[in-house]
Image (tube, rainbow, N blue to C red; front, side):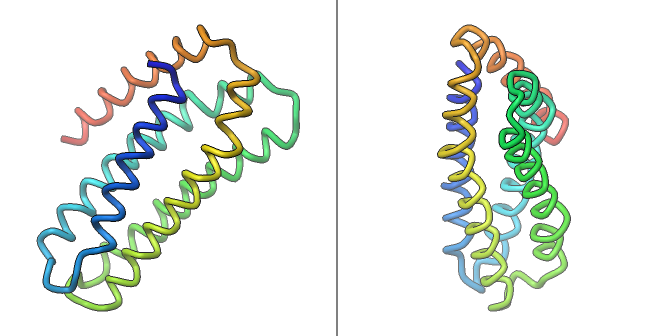
Length: 153
């Protein structure tokens, strides 16, 4: 599996989980806790393989400052989610309307980030990296993701 296919599969899973999470109600507290935990672990593995492997491959392949800015923005979006959006959910009561709003914000935030990667970053990486390089990168990313998810279990 090449790197972009792996990330697209991750994106599909994250969209599904976030949609299910945002559609929960105040009476679904157990489901909310379980979904948040799953989103958090999938997101952590996903952002780690991007930051450790995918983004550096793009940086190495380009001299374009806009590509480097795109990577910097992606990293900051990861950090905002890790340091603000998800911690806010952990501090909130899942039986409240406020939590419902925070769940929707998480979904919107993640959907925005995934869309930018798919529309801007992925085509650029496909221009810069050969097919075989994308496949080798995908293999490394897949191995690292399995390792990360095993650590989180």
